[in-house]
Image 1 (cartoon, rainbow, N blue to C red):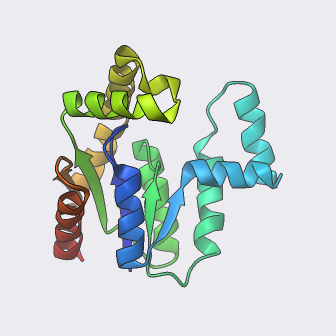
Image 2 (cartoon, rainbow, N blue to C red):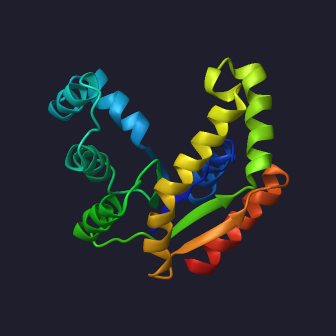
Length: 191
């Protein structure tokens, strides 16, 4: 079983690469954003709890997010593995994910971080902003702030898995196929 965490700053091509990895390795893509929308949209107990925090402008506690992950993993135990997108964002979340997977005799195989220079990210996002209609992709100072927030959030999680020999930075510039090839090389060398 292959269980991946895919990290990448805004504009790194993470979404595109996640789709390709899901297809090649037959993984279940678990996005925390999708989980929140599903649980809240279906008015589940966890969805109601998450909504109560969000409506107050508060962060949803880890135990609620992990509960949603648990539901998704336990409903899909027959897959070849998982690719986690948007989680974990903190070391306590990484620890919770490790514990959740261990309950089913699994573990995180590898954290892959798409490494793209800041100026390239800004260029990509400004270009995307012209067609996407996303206001946060049209202002360079907002883009640079999002990149810094991403770095400060994810660096401790990368270091957590690096200490276990389970983290790799992959150069995220080039054609989609070149970047995909680099990701696959890392996965295959750790599998």
